[in-house]
Length: 157
Image 1 (spheres, rainbow, N blue to C red):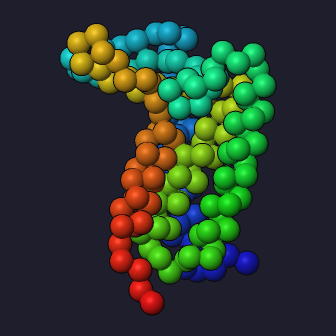
Image 2: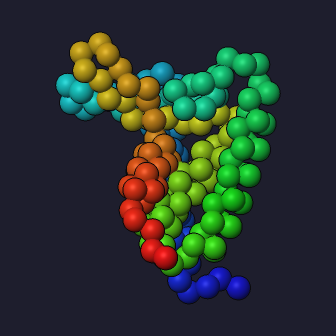
């Protein structure tokens, strides 16, 4: 049974997951692979497929990476749920974990159903482009940031 103190964290994970899947769906409906719309001088909406991990790591590895990253995501998600249950009273830590969990599940869904992750946010300065990313990646990044901040907090006891 779900403990009431965990509901807010799993709720945040669910919101991240829903927002991620919905925005990826909109991207797939509106764009063909490789399409780009310039929004500002430093931001484009695009449609890219990432078969690897962050920054397309192992994207050209021949296919085995899909199952590897799927397994890593599953194991990480199970471990995050364990940590949420164990540390439910450590709010900043749990908010960070909840964001990472929602993002991990969003990218996991893409890997399992599509074989790649849909990326659509592209930032750049002149011709220097940051790798495209999505809502899941953003949530993971913010979540890891919260976990880092939490790691510097003095521990009680």
